[in-house]
Length: 317
Length: 317
Image (cartoon, rainbow over all chains, first blue to last red; front, side):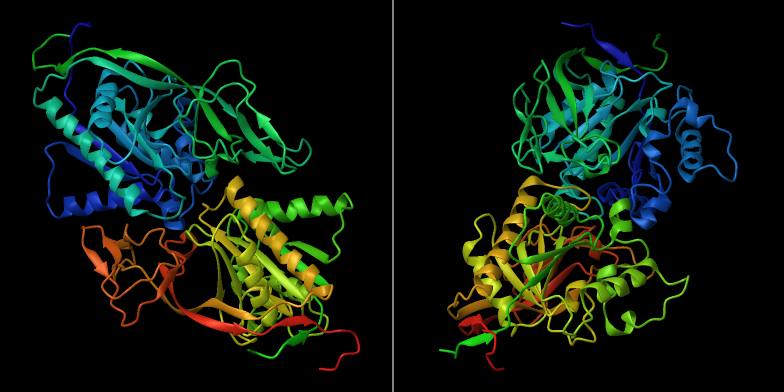
């Protein structure tokens, strides 16, 4: 049994949508939140709502010049801005100031950035650290309470400087990646599950802030191992094979050496030749064709999390 | 029983993909065909292969400046070209010359244009006329033989001048619309079904050209009635409701007055208020959000088709 831990309250949550302008569940959920706020349906937690890439949302494209959710590394955030600076770099710097700066006392306590995927990933929470007890307790809560789809957590384990994604500028980050949903449309079932996920995150924060003590336990965390590209023609870079029908839609199902990975256009099966069984995610995500990623392989590990409660005012470190 | 009909052979088929640059099944199927041709795997039918919008394919977007598959009206095809003419208008005029001109002796005998939809439409053949016996016999053949998904036929019934789509420049047109598949990716199962559909069309043409007499019969044809838009905010034009979860994925399932149509963001159900039960198609097609179309309503009718065989050389009209 781990020793109980106490951590500062989470007074402020940033709920972000439209970081990718064609991932519409988050766009519509954030707009709904903004409407509710206008109607004075106030939450006890201070929820800041942000449409992260409004130009891309307006054009219903992932991005205008470059992928905003890869622009939050310390290197890109410190590029001097000129008239030629790509829109997304300018916007990333604005957002990093608004919601961060990363590592500062003024940073938002928790950022939840809302994404869709064409892959059959259910509700996948994404956080950086697999020893951020706030994120892991939120995961445990959402996974236990969620009724409409399976819930997993992916941890990225990046250093602060190399953290490339919007939510990394907050003190804590728990983003939602939900699918399958084609980009550029809204499905009522997926929107409803995303809403349920956000409500459960807020429920946990309210309980935590008001002094509830959460039991420890063990959670399953998926960690990034490597990205696998499609087989391509060495000259043209065109795909020569696609995701094998036996792998399609099987995100988070163990892939063992010898299992089918790709099916070539001439009908041959390409098998997984790794030495270790791993869990594929983002299988056939349309936005990753241009990134050279057909799927992402992850390892699953069990993480013991300690009992957790809020640090009372005056309580020492 | 209808009298037998004889019609000229179909020596030349145009197989087009990438008319919408992010509908990838057709792009990859046409490329495979081109590879096979290069390897001298020759068909007895002359198959012309075309990537219709190569710039859009290269950028994996539906179109560059405007929807190519709305550019084939007589009015647009006769616009004088200048340096400012949108790319797709220039390209439409090139294609209309290459595969048409519409109504001329030189036009390709049959055009099959390959499309994807995010809607759950299975394999939907699209043709202009519901009294084109070539198209309707091909439909009967594909519907009878297709093993992997349901097959229907939509007829548009446009005049030649107002026919806006690529395949309309051929002597006959039978296009394939297949889904559900998100745009910008290839699913092996959908590609395989599209390939099966194309092979069945070719099989029918070979049988027809070689003198097989086809029995008459009755086929179910869906005809366009009207497009329905999403409920929108009158000021901002933003959606105020989305496809109801009970309608989602139910393309070609009869929609009766009083059935749920939309679910508003505030949770209210908007029902179908038409007087006549109709068949919805293109339900939640992502490319139609910008066109103001949430779904298309169609009427189903039974069409009797005559026995058909090829016209022998020297046979009169």
